[in-house]
Length: 486
Image (cartoon, rainbow, N blue to C red; front, side, top):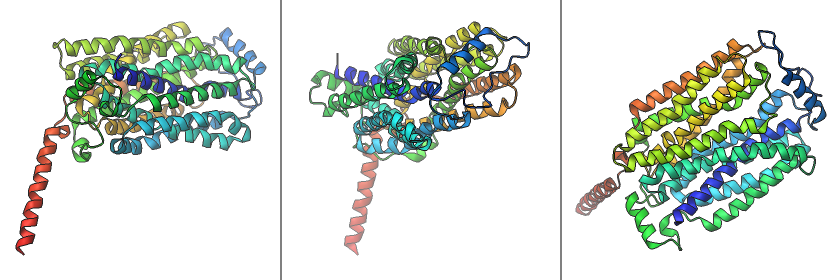
């Protein structure tokens, strides 16, 4: 096991931790809120055919028996769940740029430490008052901001190009792994945990997160050159494969070239489409199943985590296929990224269209959803590691931009759904929500197929640095000559 594998494993666990911190609130809030006290939250309407499933009545009885201590209506709950998100979006770009200049290790480790420590404060702040809790969740979001850009920057320094699909997909699939673990576990803790159940979710995961941060800061080094215990042949292997230092000594960011680069726009479009579609699948589908199919997916932690599990397994398998395609020499980076990314984005698009025509069959809908989200795992070996192909030295900066804008696009998904499904929810309204989402997936995936690239871009070419340096020196020498003559 090489040092780069240790780095990859730690980043995987960090990503899992980050997603646990992000999603545990949506499970806990069900146990925190006093549903009976909130008037106007009547049971979901029956669907157009007048069927009423037995599930609906059983969930109602569960609710009153396990009511929480807080009286927050759905609007307040919405703001509470999104407060984390705003903190997270704000810090993306600043940390991407700072990590480029000062290295990513400490931003990542300390950011996650802040996230974990404030996670421990959630129960205290919730009992202190609603706005205190919002502030704590916002700060947690700020702490999680650096995770994606800094992880990308570290992968760029540690992982040779022909291992990128495997390692990159392994790290980012930590998100699914974290969700698969946190959903059922949060459910169990909120039922049987200490301090009234739900607080134990935050104490347990906060403690785990803090331990990870300490381990990360001790075990992981910024790059192969600064690692004291790395094997010499591994160091040489990584550095020769990466050509050009990805370190802090690298040149200033070529903003103009990036903004005018079509391969960068292709990644940005794919990333925005991905987040919009994924948010629809994850946040809106459970609501659709509850309103139209009367099937309460939240009360069934195992069923909720099936799509994530499928995505995790598929992303692992397809990443090996992607690396094989590249190292076999039959496919270049560009073709590989486009093929795998198409599977990752057309798959869920077809699933969304199919899910809006399943009629009233909850299990068929769950099956379609699981398969569709499963295929979505292709994106980790598609556009998600593509930043590393086109620009290893500026990968963190590129990722901070695409991730920030993609998260804002993701925020639009629930808002759009909310506008469409005003009043009585019907199958027709939901069909429109799913169709829009599928359309976004398809358009963005096509844009990526047309303009995407797997080649290192001319604006990230270390040989050019020397030319620029040479030009600069020539200009300076001319300047000094003319000054001495005067």
